[in-house]
Image (tube, rainbow, N blue to C red; front, side, top):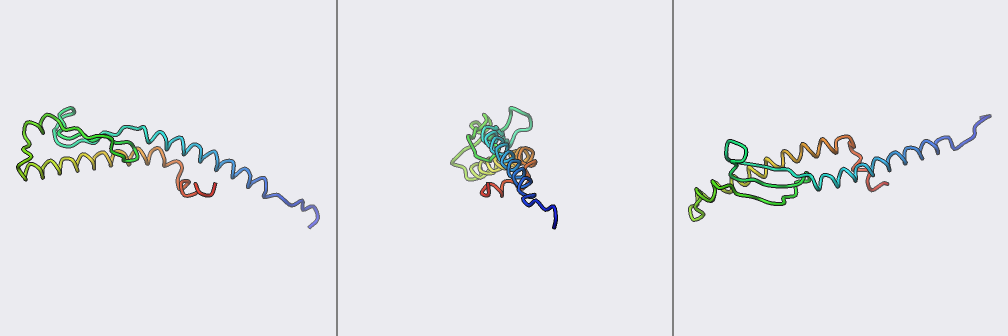
Amino acid sequence: MAGYKGGGMGGNMQNIMKQAQKMQEQMQEVDKQLDDWEIVGTSGGGTEGDETVVVYMNAKKIINGIEFGSAISSTVDLSDEDDVEMLEDLIMAAINDGYKKAEAVYEEKMGPFGNMGGLGGLL
């Protein structure tokens, strides 16, 4: 083995670790952005601004608020079980709409990192 100098992998491994650390820092920055990203889920109503229920959340699916449109106050009787059930359904629909939108944003922003999230504990 004449000419073997040893340590050939050391430089490569160091470069890989630097790249992984840089990627982890970028991923953490995107993660912070997802906290501040506002997603609006809606249900009811056919036109924008005419929604019956609006749910606000971030791109991590943390709900920050719920609003009821004027249609709720003028048509829903909370002493009527059918109206309460309808309101519950509208709330769930708005949450699910928001979740779908949040998932799309999350996948778009975190997708480039692939399975890097699983390596977080190794770095």
